[in-house]
Image (cartoon, rainbow, N blue to C red; front, side, top):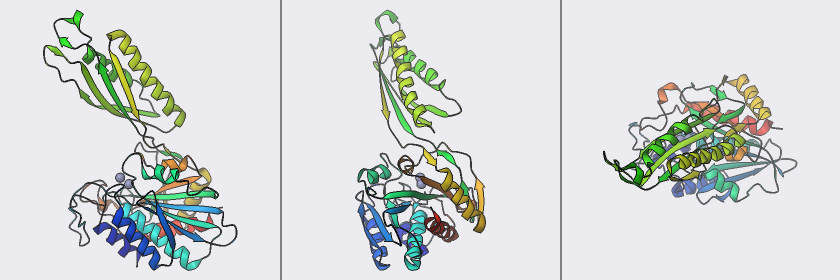
Length: 364
Ligand SMILES: [Zn+2]
Ligand SMILES: [Zn+2]
């Protein structure tokens, strides 16, 4: 099966995060067709294994995500989604096809040292992130993992352009929830109430002051269901918090709690802060990024990218192993990802395969 056929099959039958049952079965059968050994991982993921020369405890992990999004496709492509309301609108079908093609090539040529894992990872789009579930199974214990390598489609780059960013590349993402509680009551009788609305407004203002060049903090939902003359007992708020640095991330969790506690002292309210821990930031290893640059510069075109405040569960791998995550140009005509018309240029698959294969072979 060609990587493009593989991709189209996945595209036709997209499945949501952690429900990639048919996807995993299909990947298993495609790998079996190539004589590549594999097993299930994180329930709906697939881990392929290729053994090469020399020390087979030295390992390289090639990773693709395989989940789709709750979007009804409107591309009109002949291989458009047949699963109503679900679509590969983030290009994860492309990532899986690149990985499949790389494994095909590596398996056929058998010209590498150590062990190469091909990780088809489920559930990238939803917390807790399939990457955390993969790592919880400790599949690489006993191996010296010298690199985890992954890529993502990018429609701001043309086919043949490879986007790289050394060091912090993508942000951590945590969800913040606030429950500001107090004695609600008549808005005219201020001595008998705790002004939960004013307290919440203070929290929003003060939390927003924490924003700086390395931190994003935005409150996007405020629910104070009172009236002109009613102060509610509870105001609910939620937002997102993103950083590139684990220490800063943890210090801001504490800072947000401190802001809420200080506001409570002024307003007599009791605020519960709930931090939903998301993905850690993606930190690209310097040596591996240079290797991507070198190979991509020879065959393709390298584009240096700025760090971005979006998140990726690939960040979990970067906290454990030397890792690199780069962007694969799929052309501006693809349109924006996470939309019903996203249609990446399939010529990018061959580019992705060539780069990933070379990386797998050349990584030291
Ligand atoms: Zn996505
Ligand atoms: Zn994605």
